[in-house]
Image 1 (cartoon, rainbow, N blue to C red):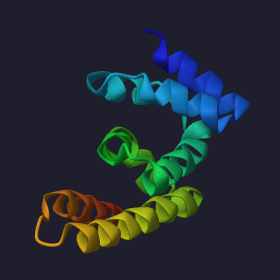
Image 2 (cartoon, rainbow, N blue to C red; image 1 turned 180 degrees about the horizontal axis):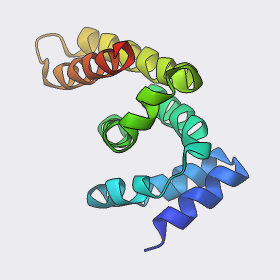
Image 3 (tube, rainbow, N blue to C red; image 1 turned 120 degrees about the horizontal axis):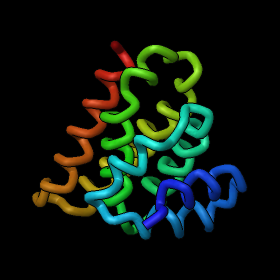
Image 4 (cartoon, rainbow, N blue to C red; image 1 turned 60 degrees about the vertical axis):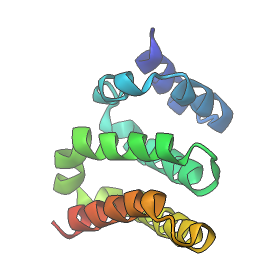
Length: 130
C-alpha cells in the first residue's frame, strides 16, 4: 500500500479524520516502515495527533505502538532537538499518565494493561531526561 504517502498528505491537509483513517489502515507490521518516511517537518503534528488518540481512542494499544515505534525510529532527532519537540512529547506523556491512572482505577487487580502504559511512560520520561 501507499500508506506513507497517504499519511504525509493527510498531515499536510491537517485533517484529523483523514489522518486517523490513514493511520488506522496501516498494518501494525508496517508502522515502522511508514514512520521512516515521515520527515521532521511533520513530527509535531503527528505527535499531537497520537496524543489525542491515546487520550480518547478505544484503540489504546495500537496508538501506543505508533508512539513507541515513532520514538524508536526518530528518537535521535527528538533527542537532538529537545526544545523543538518538548511540547508534543509532554502532551503524549501527559495523556499516557492519565490513561494509566484511569486504567489502574478501573481494572483493580488486573494490572497488565497498566503495566504496559507505565513502562511506556517510563521510557518516555527517560528519553526526555536524556
